Length: 127
Image 1 (cartoon, rainbow, N blue to C red):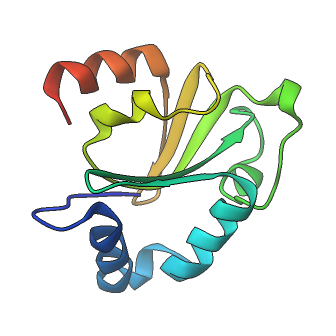
Image 2: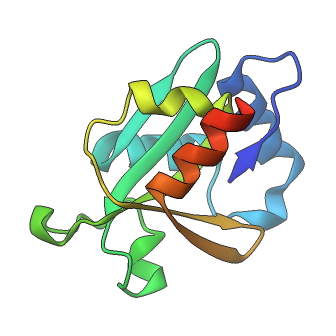
């Protein structure tokens, strides 16, 4: 889930998005945050908020979208972005593991894109 921040801190914008769209998720913001913080990675700065966990991109979608399911390291080939807000062009300074793909769910539609393509678009547009 990605959300626009307007003039808000990214983490606050994400919390507000959860409150405004309860039909788009099964858990509260804090439940998702806690799960990703425990089993994945969370970054919150004044310009960027991202919560993601490493997955195997060809796995069952129920496992992919479950941040509490941990894929063995040799199988990890993709980031699943659970939540994100703010200036995404800044993510390259923070990725703790270099994986070739990123995946996310946008209103029920799953996207999987090569990280090289994402990097090219984000750094070109500064988003």
